[in-house]
Amino acid sequence: MPLILASASPRRQQLLARIGVTADAVIPADIDESSRKGELPRVYARRMAAEKAAVIAAQHPESAVLSGDTVVAAGRRILPKAESEADARMCLDLISGRRHLVLSAVTLMLPGGRALHRLSESIVTFKRLHADEVEAYIAGGEWQGKAGGYAIQGSAEALIRSISGSYSGIMGLPLYETRSMLLSAGLLKP
View 1 (spheres, rainbow, N blue to C red):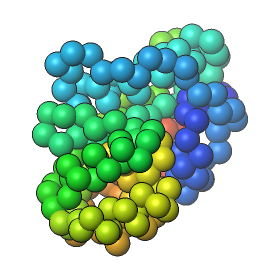
View 2: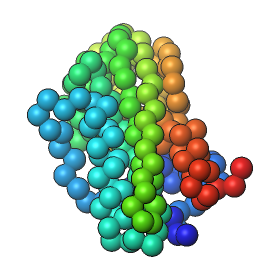
View 3: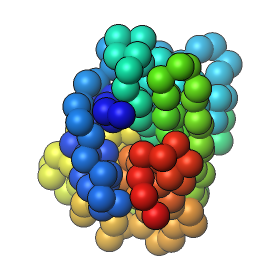
């Protein structure tokens, strides 16, 4: 059966390729990604992945649809996808010298309405960032459109003291969970 990746992220396509998967089509889901009042980060991440998959599955009922969403959280606070230097600076200032959670939810919708869901949780600890390090990172532009204002696969990696969890999940698609779902659905051979 055809596999559709419901994501605009080129990173997710690259990550899928690491496990030998190429989507037959890439169709980003156009949904409202606003969090609900009082919505906790785990609930929000799961909801976003499920809603993205459901929208595309409704348009392509004969296909399997894979979607994901990555959320960076400091406590109960969901950090934004940085759209401006001010957003990135706020995020980096908030996570500087402390641990934060990266939640990467994945949904696989199959024809007939069956849905598989997984959630990867990782803990990332940044070093205490000096103002010049923050400004240098912002000047590089890697923060643009990234949850929490950074991309672990770029120069921010040198500012991270430790991670516990899924490196690919922090990048945007947890490969262990994704591979497990694709195997159980018969869309990938062991």
